[in-house]
Image (cartoon, rainbow, N blue to C red; front, side, top):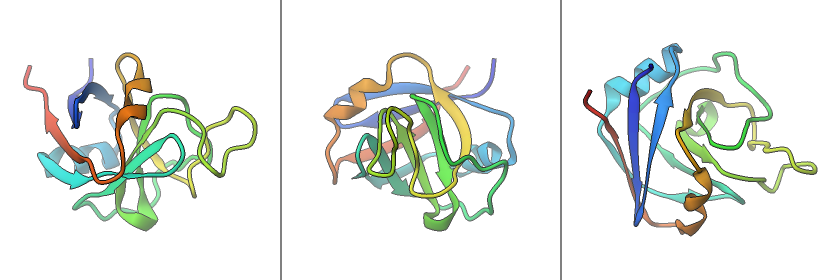
Length: 125
C-alpha cells in the first residue's frame, strides 16, 4: 500500500493514498503543509511549496482524486463537479497531476468553506 497523507480541514479529516509519481514524491517531501482553503465548485485547492511541471496531466479527474495544479502551484481535492464540468464529469480549471485518491467518502469536504485552515501531514506507519 502507498504512502498515506492525512488531510485536516476544519472538522473534516480524511486519508489520501498517494501514488508513485514524482509529483507525489515532491509533495510528500514538503510535508507538513498548512494553508487556507479556496473553493471552486466541489473542489478545494490551496497553494503549496512545490513547483513542478505537468506530469501525465489530466483534464478530467475522478471523484475523490487529489492532485497538483501546476499553474497555481496548488494542491486540489476533488469531490464533485466544478464550474468547468460538463454533465457529471469532474473537470479542473486546467490539467492537473493526479497524485492520489481519498480513502473513503470525499463528500465530507462539502462542509469546508473558503478560508478554512487545511493541514496536510504524513500518516506514520
